[in-house]
Length: 280
Image (tube, rainbow, N blue to C red; front, side, top):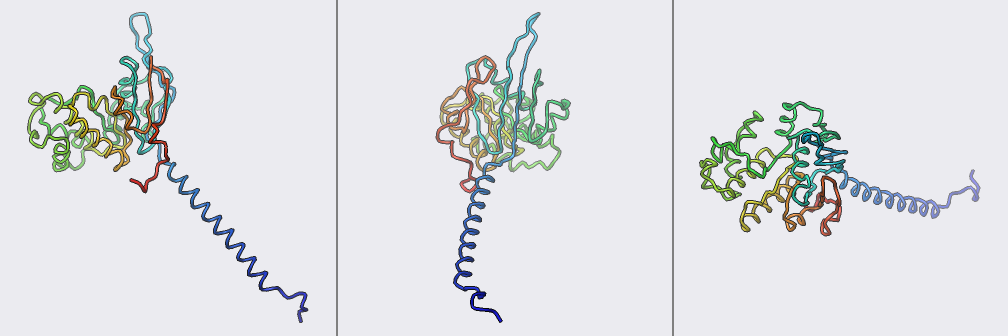
């Protein structure tokens, strides 16, 4: 028979479990909040550039266009690359997209080292993951606006959805120019065809070289809205080369080049809060 001294006080047991429960609940809450914060920042890296250098031979001299460029961008990031003419912006964009080969350093797209791939292999990676808006449009002159937009899907070999291409052309204000050839379009209209084409394969990353450079103010606003809609809704990483500082300020991050090197890499003030998928 148990003595009174050996009996367990039920009040003490209740209080002990209450303390344990409170501590466990607090621990669970903290862990949940920490995981939420951790999970919100752990987005996959889409573009990784390390020690990227590009040089050209000019007679007996070596011209360095880019020198030891390093940065990375995650899914859903938006970044503007700015700097004076001749600072290497367009060259950097082409190297990041696998359109050219670097002299040294590495470039990875969606976890794939594209600097080690053959030209055909890089073309397949671009077609699968990349959208590109060229400064000089790069439209095929013998194809209509609609056919130009469909080219990436034709190359991919999947289902060709004309309806989606038509919707994209309508969104950039070219619904009545579907069957016009590039020679029948103005420079601004050709730029809009190029932008529609860059969206058609739902890219993981979109590179745009002066995307609004040939457009009037009203059309520029529409194109900017379209670019940032893709960035927000599809979490497409967006990389812009631009001289338009107003456009650059709308991105989350601005990388400034001068003489082929990064002289600043900053977050825009209104974009400094951590990524939160619930706000999209």
